[in-house]
Length: 149
Image (cartoon, rainbow, N blue to C red; front, side, top):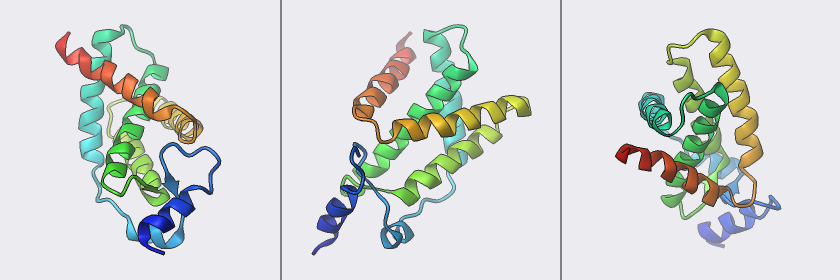
């Protein structure tokens, strides 16, 4: 069995798995990303300003939603370069680095705590939801169109 066939079998462990997430100890150990939380923070700050162009005022829930879709968008980018599969180790690393990016924000600690707690639960609820890829693309396209506003 080749690597791609193995990934296909492993991704079928989850009943609904639109991101083709694979949770396997060996594969997880082979996939790591460097610390790019600073990049995530910069991208997040730009996206917040774009969100403000299309919705004002924005709420903390809007910020959480943006963070979730930005995270899924980043995971989709990684997946494109990994035979259209996504190791669970990468999901966890991106998730943790996004929360680290939030820690850099000049917000009160209670607001950071709210955002990261809601982010965890919302992201977890969306990762295995049917239609999440299209939903993410639609949301991020709206944000990117705000560059022209």
